[in-house]
Amino acid sequence: MMVQDPIPPVPIPEPPPVIIHDIGVGTGGVVTEEVLFAIVVICMLIGAVFILGPIARAIARRLEGRGGDAALQEEVAGLRDRMGEVDHLRERMLELEERVDFAERLLARPADARAAMLPGREQDR
Image (tube, rainbow, N blue to C red; front, side, top):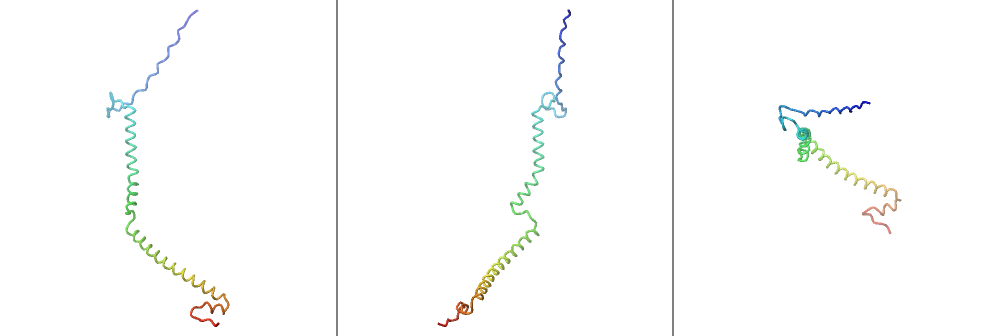
């Protein structure tokens, strides 16, 4: 009977480290995970500044009140003036509606009751 020795396991080689020759970070020019993470975070921050910077400036201009151009501000001022006129006309219209309602109620009554309601007339008693 022959006894065979088991086959030894094949060693799995470790992946080679990422080497960037120009940077020379770490020992022997090897870039570690921490350095790569820092580079990615810095790139994301720079991208966020470029993307969100104009949006933040537009919001700041709007908050300061300098958001629109002069023509737009003049148009808004004109519309506000017209709204004041419309409010005045609305009040006048409500007053006229009340007068019409009074006249309708007065005309709906009999003639002798109407004479009693009119101001300046004396009643015959």
